[in-house]
Amino acid sequence: MDSVFIFLQNNIFQLIPIFIAIYLVLYIINFDLLLMISILIFLLYFGYIYYININDTQKMITKKEVESFDNKLPSIINKYDDIVKFLYYISDFKQYNEQIYDNLIININDFLTLIEDYPILNNEGKRKQSQDVMFDVKLKILDGFSSFIYSFNNSPILESKLNESVEKLNNILNNYLIKLDIHIDNITSFNNLDYTINNYL
Image (cartoon, rainbow, N blue to C red; front, side, top):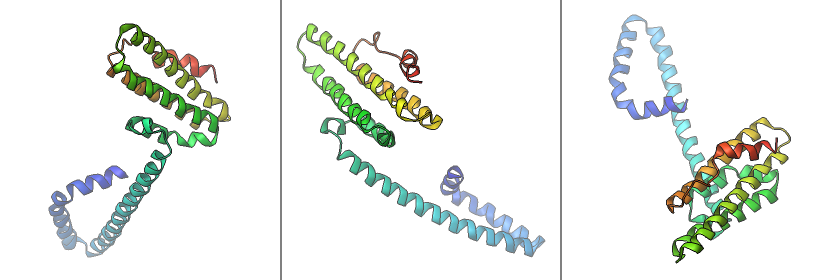
């Protein structure tokens, strides 16, 4: 339905001559049919206006919710939009196990702190040590996040969202390591991570 409204919104001026031509043909052929179509167009128009208003209102509500959500996160995390959006996306998980959710935020904060400190390390030994800690924290994040599976009471919808979200988070964390030009041979891919998730099923 959204795609129909978006198409009409983007092409309304190009479609007006076609609508007028159809209108005139129907006027000549069948006035009753024209009347019915006119009423239908009238209803569709007001439906479209209603849709636009509801959509805009929902966007405003969502924006305020995200801003309110941002204010509750550690300052380091707030600097990373993709992390903030991800945490907002999975914020409904918090009601099932608040401790896991809070630990996730703490561990992500630790990971991002390591990411920010890495460029200022002045020798190879410290950098290698930092990389090892990053990998450990990354696995701790993913392993802890995956443990939400215990709290979902065999809900297929929640389990599906969790699996999708673990993959998404894994990719986000990997991207930050790649941006630092960190050798990624030891980075756990999601294919290997399946083992971790399946342990909770």
